[in-house]
Amino acid sequence: MKSVALVFLLCSACLFAQNNQPQQPPCSAPEFHQFDFWVGDWDLSWPNPQGGSELHGENHIVREFGNCVVHENFSDHADPAFKGQSVSTFVPQANKWKQTWVDNQGAYLDFTGEFKDGQMILSRAGINRQGQKVNQRMVFKNIQPDSFNWSWESSQDEGKTWKVQWPIHYTRRK
Image 1 (cartoon, one colour):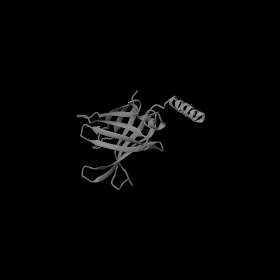
Image 2 (cartoon, rainbow, N blue to C red):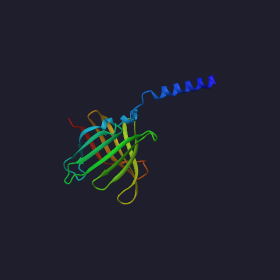
Image 3 (cartoon, rainbow, N blue to C red):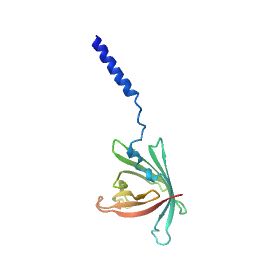
Image 4 (tube, helix red, strand yellow):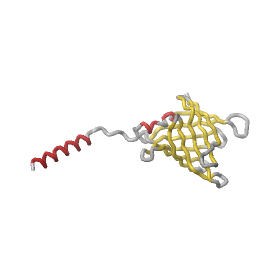
């Protein structure tokens, strides 16, 4: 009987010690900070596909929900403006980033990716306007504290080759 009481006492002490250890806050793992370079206010520029002067826009990126979500608000300076938002989070169970994009042209896009070799690449399998299967991706590269390059790319051959559709240069607003 004394040994049962001793075992119970020891187990209770172990459980009490485990329950009183400080809990790691949600979303505090290093992977949740891989998108920190993107947070802030940005001025954007890209080549005009019809030629002529460069086009411009802006992007406002914040962390929300206890630093678990990266929230993007994009707008170009066209008339009428193209506007969109995305939410991104790191999913530990998949060891990947997930992003959902919606915009004022009715798009809904879902991406999965990772930060590797100094680049964040988020990709998806989709259908182009002609109804053909296409792979699409966003590549965040040449990342510096106050600038980086982003490109929207597509592949018709299941990712063997990629074509840049929309290159944007980001400059941090001061």
